[in-house]
Length: 142
Image (cartoon, rainbow, N blue to C red; front, side, top):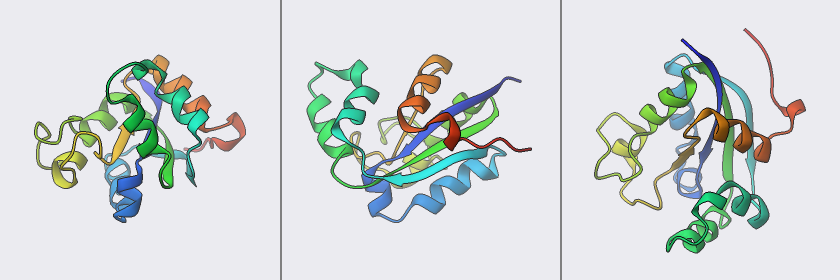
């Protein structure tokens, strides 16, 4: 097992639909620990930094506009194999490919408005966490 940290964002559609608690509870029930949590308005600068890898793709501007349209919830999570577990709990990006029981499989109907973002690897997790959280905002506990 590998102890990891990762970032999850509850996107504007998840916040608007009142799914924050449901989403967080799925990670906690799996044994993952929340080490940072905040509700915020995502600035365009921060959204562009987070999604820089997608710049130039046809959906990029729509994604940035969506992510900055309403509040989001940023969640820092820690646990054994946290990156892969979070991605499994979230389900496939395309809700038509997400299995029932995953967040997207249970609640999402659109590939853009798919409720959650999660880091896809250790390097991205650490850089994405740094975009949303200062070191002082992350807790350490057993």
